[in-house]
Amino acid sequence: MQTVFSLDHHAVNPSHDDVMGIISLVFWSILLIVCVKYVSLVMRADNEGEGGILALMALLRRHLPVHSRLTGTALALGMIGAALFFGDAMITPAISVMSALEGVAVVDPTLTEVVLPASVIILTILFVLQRQGTAAIGRAFGPIMAVWFLTLAALGVPWIMRYPQILAALSPEWALRFVVDSPWRAFVAMGAVVLTITGAEALYADLGHFGTRPIRFAWFCAVLPALTLNYLGQGAMIVLNPRRISNPFFQMAPGWATVPLVVLATAATIIASQAVITGTFSVAHQASRLGLLPRFSVFHTSRKESGQIYIPEINWTLYIGVLGLIAVFQSSGRLSTAYGLAVTGTLLLTTVLFLLLARRSWRWPLPVVVLIGIVIGGLELSLLIANMLKIASGGWVPLVVAGAAILTMTTWRQGTAYVATRRAAVEGPLDDFITGIRDDRPVRVPGLAVYPHPDRVTTPLALRTNLEFNHVLHEHIVIASIINENVPHIAHSQRVQITDLGAPDDGIVYLECHVGFADSQDIPKAIALAGDLLPELQLRLAEAIYFLSVADVRPADASNSLPAASRCAMPAWRRMFYVALSRNQADRTKVFRLPRARSVVLGDVITI
Image 1: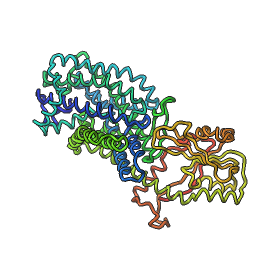
Image 2: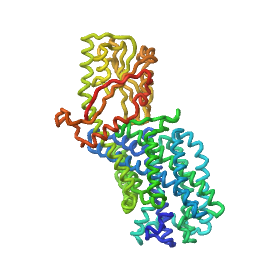
Image 3: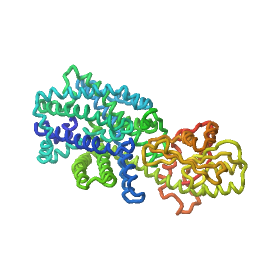
Image 4: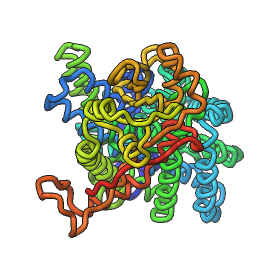
């Protein structure tokens, strides 16, 4: 509300009709986009408990032909939406905490100088606490949020009682009248109205942390009523006291309550930032498991909820970005110009993917899909276009962040496909390798050797290298593949499949472990699950040696003898970027939960 009436816009006045129109726009934006779209519709598209635009994209792709054009379109939309979400996630903590702390200026304008250092200290503590996990933080934050929403409602009710005519703003007539009578002012105002629906995508992305029922219950029973009463109260106050537009939220409270309200608002915005941070962990993890980003060091912070994770690389990247934004913009008012494009872009892409899913997979009637697209999609498109006015004054920030994320995902996807092709040529067919073993009869030594490998088509580099250098093979060999499926979870009873390779008595088996993108890639656990099928593996699991195949990816130089047709099509700078990403991936012994003391790394060099 402060932003929409700010002098920078030179458009919206604190007059009766403008206030009624703005409050109506705010209410119906929240009702249509958050209530109808996300809470009522999109959250039906939970991908076996996981949410977020990538989970939605994976759910849609699972119902489409593998090589159809629509499948590629869904992947592209999901990548762009995830990239925009990363841009949103970097801005949200900075603008939220600063806007709350700026309330101290209502008490004493000289205290404005403490806003920046206090914001840095608070956000530093928040990012440090992420390692504790959602459940631990939630136990502390839950009571604060209950008090916060009760306070929002309590602030609005007295002003509504003073000016009950504000309740008429709940009618869409005022929003439509404002748009029709003052289309340009309404268009400019939409760039600020979008601030009232930020966090909706994070709500969906956090589905794996909390579940559908708790989110819906909290939204309809606490959040929506409190927000509605508060916005109505702010509108009533501005109609009665037009001069209070400088910081209407804090000026709703009596003078004695301003400082406690600043403290409470700061705590609430910290928690709002927490929701975006955990949502970013979920989206980054899904992107990695879908082959769009490198491996991350994922720590599961709950024994009960597999979706509760912590990713240090994402956590500290966000932290550095947030501090950079605070240093550059130095106030929530300036930073608000950078906000909106990422949010509205992600909103619109989620709508497109959801409607494709509803039509192609759920077989919703075409008129229903078209109606949702026109009403909700049209509103989101208008919000997106309105926010394009902010590009020059700060809207470029989320676009730069999103562009960097898209560049990273496309580089990783293209480079990985090239390396996989080159690696397959070096490894050679697995069936030929096993036939050679049967003919040459190398020395077999006691023990169990486990070779993690993507598939059963080619020979693990470590297996081939081990035989070439040591001229021996272990008595029992397991080639273990982790197969990532386009679902969040797969039951333990359905994860493991065992296939004999070569002769039944040669001790070489292929283990296939199917996991969802929210499951851990625990290879020792997969072998333990196969214990009923192969009891001898269970007996030797405690002494198993794990041989990791590593392709050391290096940039090609002038002496590279590869023919031009076999070289990677990416420019040299992107190949260098891919090499940097590859070398800084998470340690696979951690990803696969392998005992470091019994893990051996062998492999070959691949130039790109």
